[in-house]
Amino acid sequence: MTLPWGRIERRLRQFLPGRAVVARRQELLTYDSDGLTLHRQEPPLAVLPETTEQVAAVLSLCHEEGVPFVARGSGTGLSGGAVAEQESLLVVTSRMRSVLALDLENQRITVQPGVINSWVTRAVSGDGFYYAPDPSSQVVCSIGGNVAENAGGVHCLKYGVTSNHVLELEVVLPDGRITRLGGSLAEMPGLDLRGVFIGSEGTLGIATAITLRLLRQPQTVQVLLADFPSMEAAGEAVRRVTEAGVLPAGMEIMDNFTINAVDDLFGCDEYPRDAAAVLLIELDGRLEEVDAAALRTMELCRRAGARSLRRAESDTDRALLWKGRKSAFAAVGRITPTYYVQDGVVPRSALPAVLAAIELLSRRYSLPVANVFHAGDGNLHPLILYDASQEGVQDRVQALGADILRLCIDAGGSITGEHGVGADKRCYMDWMFSPDDLSTMRLVRQAFDPEGRANPGKLFPTPRSCGESARLARTVRVNVAAGKEADRPLPASLEVF
Image (cartoon, rainbow, N blue to C red):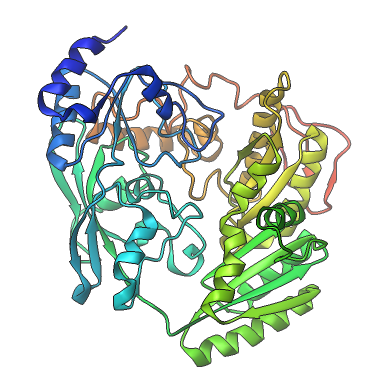
């Protein structure tokens, strides 16, 4: 059924500023994908509200007209979650960029959803505070999008993901009503509806004001760079450090392909080009504790096979070491025409074997895979490199991505750590959850959105979007423990044994 978009546009223009309604096709093309360009669909109409009241008016109109809607922030997501696949109104929050309240005495700040992640720290750093969640895209991603996807980042190992730092949400429900979830205190009585909303990927409504928890800046910060002759040795170093009880603020690994891509991007050899992998470890806290932890960590890295170690203590040196990691995706993008990034999670103890298995899959599909990831919490970000002009290559790319996620699940992990499910991974949800699990999740969604108009088709598998394709994907059987292919393929799954 085609919706009456001409009438809807006229009604929207009655209460929104003229520049807040986008109807020209040339402008709508801006919104045909998020950061995962594999999924593209141009929306029929988009609006850019600036206040909670405007968002409420838009969703009230959608409720009255029976119009589905999709919320979108900066568009940096990597799961196709902000794409209007079905005929839907796109509600873009990128103009909602105000700091609404600042309460340093109680270490909290309230912002609109379009505020950029790094702006929060910038607003309070002069007073000795910062905002801990720091996705690699933090200079462009928005807080509203971080809430929708429950984004993580380098510091999630020690400080947790977005849900650990959101106190209260002002939310416009799909029928246009405004409500508040959570409160000014970290622990509130009653059901944790704040926690339900965070990570719901726009399927329960739109957050229009978000109260965040601020942290005091640590007394000192040090960053260690260790390079290794193999990816397995780098994974072993991660295992040893965490097993020893050291709790870094973050631990990140880059493989050789990514190392050289980053060095080429900046025109210098900041990371050793011949290393199979580098491990970045950030330690923060009191000076004496950090010094002791740094010495212990360096020794553990040596025992795991580190070839060399570098210790950065000044702000300039630390920023230089992190610059490459934060720019890794962009650096790879300069080399390959296109790439497809996955977001699986595995237990830290399984890192060495799973990374070896990914290499086997890469060779089997004849598709290079660059690895750069949050090693401390086992959150892998394999980048599958390909040329989109090759016939049939996207099917191979998606099949390899599915096999990597199957591998993560069978190793005791998950299909996503911070990028969300969206459109990209909805067909794999039943790999992790039983029919009863998924039914319960849908009941929660229906309580917020009985008509299913908020971000329709996302998050959950449907016959229309998935059919049996996910279950019937052909994969290779990999012996993770031995790091080699078995004698024969399995038709349905990648088995870890």
